[in-house]
Length: 490
Ligand code: URA
Image (cartoon, rainbow, N blue to C red; front, side, top):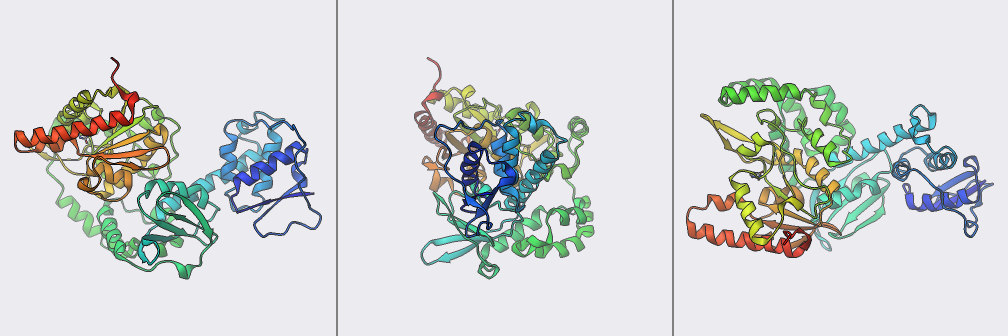
């Protein structure tokens, strides 16, 4: 029997090195064991000797490392040996991962799903509370109790989303800290170390009460998705009982105060779309990350994560090549974009195009999208007047924006206006404080915040418009200097 030490409960790199060595030595899975941290190996287990010099590297299908990285996060105490068994079998059974009926594959897929689900819950249910730390200054702390060993797996998501904050997530087994540029892992914490209430609590309560839709209330489904275990960390759960109790009256109020109906032509169009998108609301709750832009675009067609899908004609997804070095993000589609299904083709799009042309940027090399993918409007006679999306709608649509960012991995993200900047940074910022600076989002991506082109259109006099157009053009010139490959062909 051989044993290999691993540093922490989801030490994938440690497992990979040890497994390669074990494989090179021909150690069968039944003869292999792993210890984590301070655990003591079994009485008869010998440390794994080094691999013989020149031993060949094992070959595995492309999908295996990703699967194994999830398996080692599972709470199953046998996870490392099980992942090694798959690696062992793959050396002779090359198609193993495709055999859906194989008991090991069934088990692997279930473990993978459980880990993904737990990670999804962590993303959804972590609530930061603000504290003033004598050393760290303003600092956000959250407490979370995962079922599986998912802290390392999920922490990069929080680093991307809350890049501009200093935060710590405490969990019983392992905690993680983000200092604004790096993640570090700390020992586990105890429940009494979790932060007490703060001002953010009031914000959450207002937000939750405003996105709560009494007409869609399904108590059982809600409790299944948000198990009571997490309630203690989530200020909004204090509102659940009163909101449920008031739901019937609130539904009635919604019916009575429903906005005036839009024109018949528009209504028919909406109905056609509605029929084409008959997907139950629950489908959006546990969503699989799309593997490419096309899948994402098709998936977004059916999105009902917020109420905006209903009156809008269609989802207006981003446009542009999957390897675009720059992603421009606007607020939400306007009237013309909603009808055509393409971003930035109306009046704001014209201002945008002019600025790109002045800077010598080729729009076809850029990816252009919006923070919110459905047109929000209030009907006025035959016209549909733009209405600003609220924080809940921006938040609901951030999933798609994150998907677009993950698939495209642009070098530069350009936020056109405050809504786009808030959607990228996960917090409200002012254009005045952030404009025209190259802000690090992560190691490979910078963010540039500028105004929304429609701000220029709304300015009352020609002098102000000329001044602001020049400033916007200067920002586009900075985009072009930062990403020279955007240049229009000569
Ligand atoms: N305004 C935006 O933010 N996006 C568009 O696509 C059109 C107008």
